[in-house]
Length: 521
Image 1: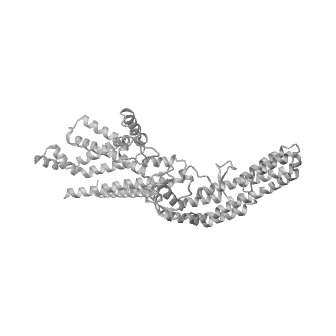
Image 2 (image 1 turned 45 degrees about the horizontal axis):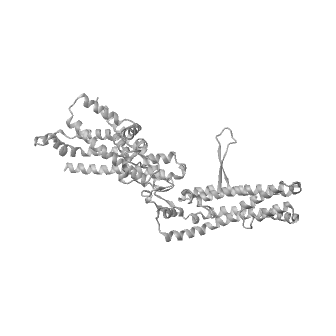
């Protein structure tokens, strides 16, 4: 090969290497940028008053005087909404009370007849301050009473009017009930509601972006049109006010919509918030509120536990293979087995951990951090062995020869000369293994992880399972009943896990640089 051709090949390989590096950098940007951006949304966002109320009532965080003053302002801003809802219900009720007056006139005309007595009993149970449901129920019973009379034909006009009015009011009341339900999602329970059992229903939207989405659902109704057989359906968006056109309550509902649309900021009081307690708070109601402390702590327990088992065994095995074992078929077979185990799918290690640690030797009664740590340690052990072995083999043989010439024993040489020189390479293998252990899901599904749990004390890790970031990310993204409402929690967990692995790698790089500098003198 002449010099010109060699230069062309060198430049081609250099260009290919630079292109590969650029392509990898772009791939990382494309993958990590959305995670970083949306993950930061779990920590930095515009929080509504509902978020501050949750933090105060559920976590005891916040100043009571400030919360109380702000609550008064929020209540004042929301009162017109409740007043307009009450006015709409009153208009519907007044429309029905016209029929009640007609029935009262019928009672007066009938005087002491059996029909008059029956109707009078119905009307007696209807006080003036009755709610709409009571009026509708009373008129329904009156209609049934009239229809059951031998002379029902004489009251056909009144019966028909009651039927028509009840149908109109029932339809308007159902639409009003749907509107109230949408308002509950935005604002929380309405005045007069029984306190809901689920925590998520006791508060309105805690984030400004969610409040704006919920406002759209208050003002509009979404439905699917399947009239075109060639399509799978088209989503149709209609203004909710159209449902109330021509009814008695149209002016009240139109004023209500206009007020909410123009005063949402006053109603929800958004404020830019740095929610650093996302890392330290426990979750409430399946991650609707709170943070990820149990998951973060569980990930630390599993990762540190795996490294405590894997590092000593891995380094000792590497020392034996490099310094003590004589070349033989057995050693070659052992190295081949180690390399093969490094490529075994993680799910296999998970099944092995379930069968061996939990069912065979029964190190715990059920899933536990200890069983998960042992399983992860077996999974990363081949990587630690191979990395440590390569680092030890890279130590110049003159180092060992000099130590042995000075009278040092083999073990003393390994401990004071070989290992310090190989430490940077060993640390690299350890950190790579640690990152893998922190991010693995399959092994801990069967041995350690649960979807919901409290932070564990150190001594509880021997016999108790724990939440962990990898498993909970998968669980929240695929199996949560309200997966779209907690996207910020999912991305916050992913961001935290990626940041954790990056921090570990940066710390290892710094530590390796310091060790290398110290060794160079």
